[in-house]
Image (cartoon, rainbow, N blue to C red; front, side, top):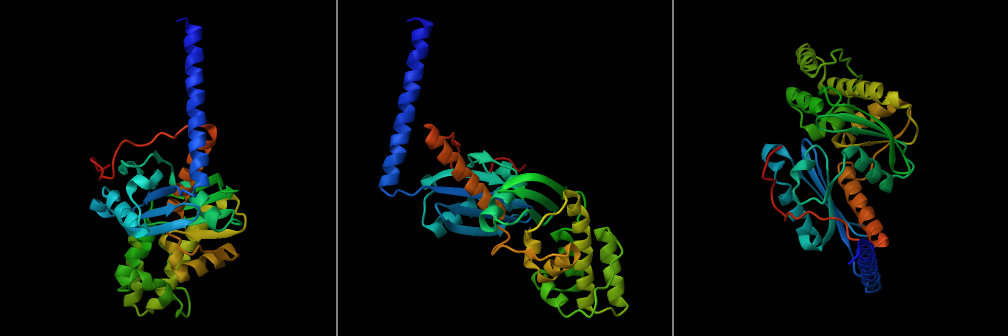
Length: 312
């Protein structure tokens, strides 16, 4: 058989395969079959899983921690149980976040910047500037139609991150989730001059010993973080609407401090921790749907739902 005949045969087989895939997609659609897609976001402190179809089926948040980081499969199992699904029913799985390499059952890894943009746009489509305050970093992201235009990140210093709030909460004897509420009783925001988390902690402890009210100190910490975040994000040429995500978005005191610093209302999604996982799931859905329209099946991971072999 000549090379030309062989090539024609290969092209014919590829066309037949595409027609078959597209026909199967039309059959599933006509029967009302639902496809499910999952996003897994392994952050520094929390692991999030979101499963979507044409809506959000379920969202689950669990701790990351030293051991949990390599056990993303456990959080996925819980999410599947909550949605009454089996892993085999998922059409595609996308992993994101710092620990995305530790998700062996994921079909693809995508950066958290891209996933945050996609996820938040699906919830708050008017937003053009995202402030993400996570456990170990803070980010500013400029987006347009759910796509990243530019971003900045602070991952070298804990100041301006959730870790800073954890340290201060521990020093003041206040539960982390209560900081926002406590700050609402402040008569003023006590200035925190230190820009380093370690020195700021000592400064807070010293001021507390000198009789400064806890509420004022917490308000001062919020103002300090807001100032650092603003200095970071303004490099992007801030454009409204502005939204905040991550654990910091659950702190009303910090959100108000950001609004004062940015001189604008700051939107908060209903669950600010899941935007990355949601974006990952939606990007997986897009990839699958485009593949079907083009007549091929996207490449899937051959790994089952298991824990990572290596802790990276």
